[in-house]
Amino acid sequence: MAASAFSASFVVNLLLSSKWLRHLATDKPGHRSLHQHATPRTGGLGIIAGLLCASLLGLSWPMQWVLALSMLAAISLADDILSLPARTRLVTQICSGSLALYWLIPEAHFWLLLPALILVSVWATNLYNFMDGANGLAGGMGMIGFGWLALASWHSAPDLAGICLALAAASTGFWCINFWSGRIFMGDAGSTLLGMCAALIGISGTLRQCWPFWLPLMVFSPFIADASVTLAKRIYAKQRFWEAHREHYYQRLIRSGWSHRQLAMASYALMLFCGGLAMQTINQSNAIIISIWFALLLIYQIMFHLIDSRWKHFADSH
Image 1 (cartoon, rainbow, N blue to C red):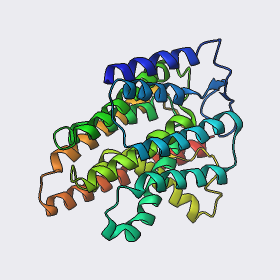
Image 2 (tube, rainbow, N blue to C red):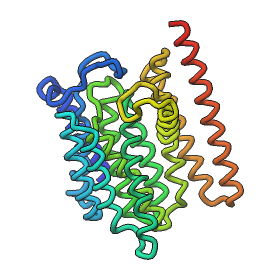
Image 3 (spheres, one colour):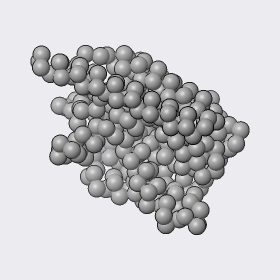
Image 4 (cartoon, helix red, strand yellow):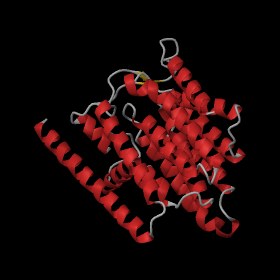
């Protein structure tokens, strides 16, 4: 199934980036962009094709997830083509998260957990979208992040592991086209789908006791840290935080001189480190887990300080 998900995603993305289909929906360069040429943003269709192919060959999805993700993918694809209002996208994300989570939460804690988990799912959906702005970045996170979750759930929840493996494989099919040449972008249809899946799988695995709640957070922490800190800074500065911008740390690295490939390789190393750290920490005592989290947060603080210093020096010299 993983091979079919990869193959379908790769072939569809290859076709969508060809001269015959690349004009279906294009992302034109603007003052908030990191790319220089009009580029198709239909890569999400390839990822969806990979998941559909794996499903036809036996991959089992909860029916409510299928309905929720189909709704989200349809609106996100329409946004890639037509640029829908932010309110429409947000309402769809809330409805999709509610539909998918309704059946997961134990009845005894339903009304306490549902609002908080819907918020988590919407934030995960958007932060993945925020971080989809450099060649190889979002595809690599899907490839590595879901790969770690597949490994973590392999023995305790084979069905969940199969979904994670299919997501990792479909992301890899997209990555093969996006990383080397930047010929196609994931678009909202791909990034929001992967973000919502990350939230649903993380929550489901926690409720099924496949892993502690913090493990998916550590695995995806490179995305979570950048998106969350950037959002907090923009809210504090009273900026229009819901609008597209180029203030994420990964964007500042590229704008100050890093290449897309340098950023991607450094990000992969960080993603692999965080996933490996999570897997090694899972059976440790609470005191060690808390200490490791403090150490990881300190690492992020140092990294962001260094990037801020680099950006200030770059801005002052230009």
